[in-house]
Length: 131
Image 1 (cartoon, rainbow, N blue to C red):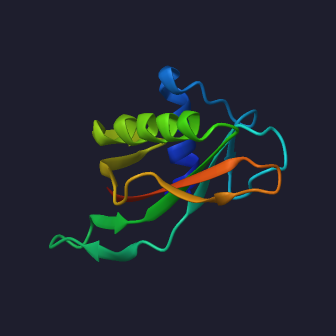
Image 2 (image 1 turned 90 degrees about the horizontal axis):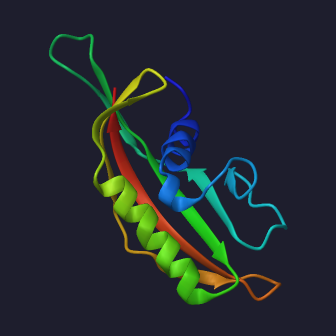
Image 3 (image 1 turned 180 degrees about the horizontal axis):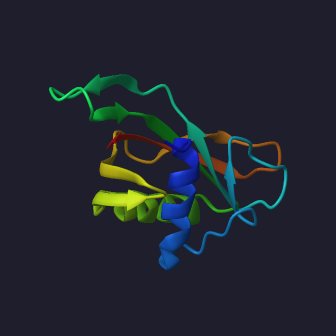
């Protein structure tokens, strides 16, 4: 299976309403200093894998966090909400050969902090189930 953040990147890029393009304003693992308006995906801790009764289907429960950085708080919160909505409608989709049973937000968009340039940073946590 591919690294979770790579699949999440592809899901976000596929939703044209979000306007996210890797690596222009969409990033993995490291938030660059510029541009000011970014979305960054961070792989999370997740939960232990579960092997099914047939000993062949391995279900994974990885988690990830998305950080939205924006110059305006209301714009950042709006984009964060759109990202949550984009994932909430996903079920039983295959991305890069991996079946995702669900991608679910486990938190509402929450203000993390303000960076050194006065941009707000908003985080959202997600859990997934895949095999």
